[in-house]
Figure (spheres, chains in turn red, cyan):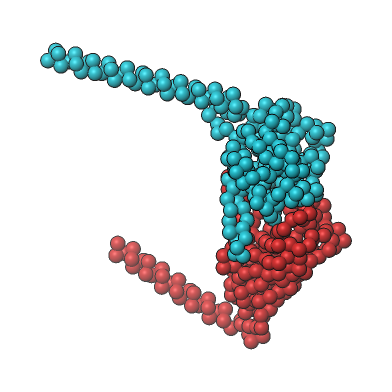
Length: 187
Length: 208
């Protein structure tokens, strides 16, 4: 028992030393120039939504978010030109039951992580739609982050039933290429 | 001593008798259940019965009851129009499947039953369904009618509040496939390949 405790203490100490060494090794790389870019940089790619059936009051929004910053950030909401409100939701399927939950407190994007909001998982919920998204006519919007603040995006509109922006399901959205591709740095 | 033994023997005999009666009654009840399940068309002995009689209202505002399904293969799924993903996708996929079935599709009844009758009036269903195959029947009704139909189809349907005081719905998303005798033969889900779903529908039509 004592031997085990001693070994654990030894391991812990080694780990602490290794961590300290790593911290020192990493620190000098942060120049003054880098610091302002790496503080909180999120990059947005492949923002898209789908055409909705007539009379639809909601739509799902999908986007890929990369956090190039050194700190975790949170997607807490946003805006969509055709809807009153935007919430961050998660859809799950268990034993044939589809469940929808608001992601309370926002969706964390860890430093270095890429988080994909896609059908069947995390998504933006565009609520109280005031107009129909039309295939080929991108819709302006924003994403709201806790640290990076507001980031402008343009949502490409894929056809009804599309499973991805360019994937199969519906046909490819016509008359346009990628969705928004914006980068936001917090200075 | 001898009297004691014979008393114990008699008690034992009575107890065994009770066991035999219990087994007989239990067996009879079980068989009765199985027959009932078979009569009602459950696909497996002892399987949970899915489906049953209902009275609802279609997208044109006309009464629609389970009578309309007698003798017809049918696909039934529940959803709602304030649904961003799975419901429009299911309707879209069903539209494609109906097209792929060709003339057989006319023999299949496809029902989309709302789990949210408060917002999904027949008129709302009609507007919404205009984007899909016109053969898809949209069903609503009073809260009680819908709850009754949902319970017969063993549908989970629960309201979830959203932060603005509105709500969304959690619900069973599977599509149930019944043959013309009303027997549940399969289900479709959106995690399986389109080809698999198409084959299931083809088999359903061959069976019916």
